Amino acid sequence: MTETKTPTVLARQEKLPLGGLVVLAATGFLTVMLETVPSGILPAISDGLLIAESAAGQLVTIYAIGSIVGAIPIISATMGWPRRRLLVASLGGFAVTTAIVAVAPWFQLTLVARFLTGIFAGVTWGIIAGYASRITPARIRGRGMTIALAGAPTALAIGTPIGTLVAEMVGWRLTFLMLALFAVVILVWALIVLPSVPGQAAGQQTSVVDAVRRPGVVAVIVASVLFIMGHYVLYAYNSAFILPIEGVQVGAFLLVFGLASLVSLWSAGMLVDHHLRGFMLVSLVAFGVALVALGVISGSTIAVYVAAAVWGLGFGGASGPGPQKALVDAAGDAVDAAQAVLVTGWNIGIALGGIIGGVTLEAVDVGALPWAALVFILAAFIIVMTGRRNAFPARPMVIGSAPARRAEAPS
Image: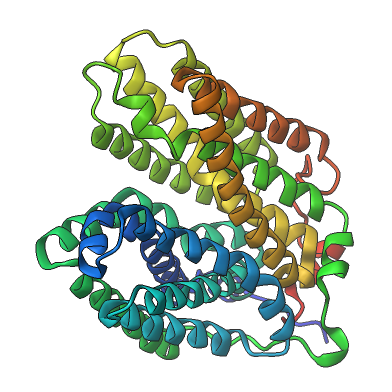
């Protein structure tokens, strides 16, 4: 006899697993804090370790390198692990390595600890989106992923400035100890409320090669990497671009950008389940318009702040929930392997964006940065436009279709 599900049962099945999603968001928040806080307190770190400020800056670089080299091999090697076990192991790694940074008397030991922290970060970003997609009902998967991914932009908009302020008040070593303790709190929290998700059985495990061969996966990854490259061409040198503009403060500019990014993130939660393609296209257009505005502005304070807001509206949701939802739909049960490639590409894109921005700054001038960034955003826009079949489909995913069933398979 066919079971008939009542509206009450259906409503219960559509309920967001909010506790688990917030744990994932907190993990992302911590990961970004660990990455970005050192950049705001480099003079204090250089004084504490008796090194040059340029050497202290390598604590940020080595973290990114760890993320690049760690994501694909470790995610590939742990396909069979239950996802909660892998997440908890990464959080434990955060706690230990961050505590080492807090107490290390030698710069070399600090570098090694930061490299290992970066590896754990690569693993963490490799599983957050897939984890969120598997514990959230299919029809509201985009909303669930948006909540899980909200930690990163929240950290950039609010967490990092607060972390820098705390470090100035209590010292950088105590700040890192606090971050290590925060990792322990999230670890315990995850063990209590995060639903367990099994790993893939030995005969069902998907390799990175299998993942990138799936229709649409490469297009989503390339578009996302181009997007982040365009962002960092300008964002990495925002102070150099903004300081010459009379009446505009860097901190206020970044605050406007960050708050607008959070608005964009909230919009993504409402739209990406059923209007993913349109959301991505509008976000890219907004990003492009902001870059053009910044490229032609000639001293209008209000216009600069408006451009910052439009930039944030174009960035927030399209940097995380949009491409992540597209990747889940395209990769299906190979999402973790595909996500590992995306994380690696993102970190490479961040590095390349910074390099290209620096070359542009030296070879031309600061005014050329928005135009250099615009090249990559236009390229991402073309990929989204042409990816209407598999990468960014014109119609929302229909639950019960083949992609939907793949995405529901055990991980």
